[in-house]
Picture 1 (tube, one colour):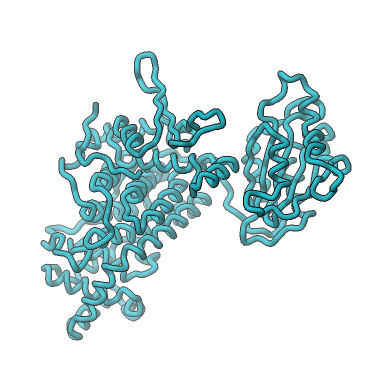
Picture 2: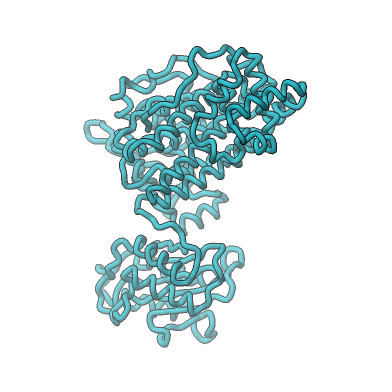
Length: 576
């Protein structure tokens, strides 16, 4: 059950919407289920002799009774309360109890307070009600509604228990501000699937992904088409920033600006500077941490895969302050992948990055945000440009997505173990989106690998089956039933022809954590083997680098750091 509080200044306009047909004729039988004084409250939905004007005048009477200079400009308190789609339909009497408990919990009308604010609850659909109140009490004072949003949330959690409804995860007051119902309606009218606030939050996070300095961060926002306004001191120093979506204007025709701190707590300029400064303190600017060359998308993704794997190993063991930095780094890689993904997976990776953003923030601050490796991986992905989604490029994308699925699942388990309910749910949701993207990206390269595996002589297949049994005793039978078995056999054979010892390489791949959480173990092993053995991610391509490495990389402790369309300049930037 989700409450959504907003303020407005037009009582009649809101009532006209609630009692009207809706934007798509979706409002059915609008009527009151509860009010401050039922015997005094006209109901235009059920009584044809009453009007919306009469109801509006009754609600506004306490506001009109006080001197004009004491009237709040936004005197209408509006709180839709919506049940979960899987919940049973509540009766009018049950919704009335929900409304009374919400207005009491939020300070609008506490139980037994005869001088409380006037309010009504309108129902025009099975799954939700709208509570409307005016923000002057009968005695002329304003209600004590401090922290009303979180108090409404807490009461709804208790209502779910009492009514036997689906219990949502309790909040911890670290979430970014939710779009209001008015913002969502505006986005719907504009034909957008997300609100301006959500789109701008994505742009700002993606501009941060791997940015070397503050100038590059602002340049990326401008390149993405975002309107940018920097607040400057008389000295010319930047004190803050705000962003607006082109074409998003208020009734006066002015741009609707959002300061970074209103998008998310960690997107204020001081927080962003803190992260950028920590990178420079760690042995120099990020822009100097890589050679002055441009990698192709495939190579950048292959390198990022290894870094993400090592990060996953590290944050399962680190303390909370270090884990905060490591999870922020993982979010930054997701943002980089989202803005450079091919069209076939762009929506899923964008949804994954947007969901995981919630998993990067809880009460423990990221005291260390100095993982140069992860931020450099995000930067390389962006500098390499957009992936085409086919050939070696598509295989490397599948390789990285497979690892990101396991990394986000590991993050979900880490949060769940510490009772970070909202963050754990967000990480699991991100993993679901990444799975969908992986299935799309992996279809072509895995099909080619399976075909190669099936063409191998039976004696060769038998030899590689023994290799798998030696590395994973007792699991060969279940692995052979997976769809990726032939691809695994083909990969082991290719590793042998490239000069590797297949058994040693497979043991190395098995040593990495998170294998047991994989939906398809053979798929995970295929991509790990190809990365460790420097084999091509797509078997139809030339070898990526088939030379046996002198020493295979080992899981190591790493330290980490956070996230549109347009990639940044391939040339690394210098601090200005």
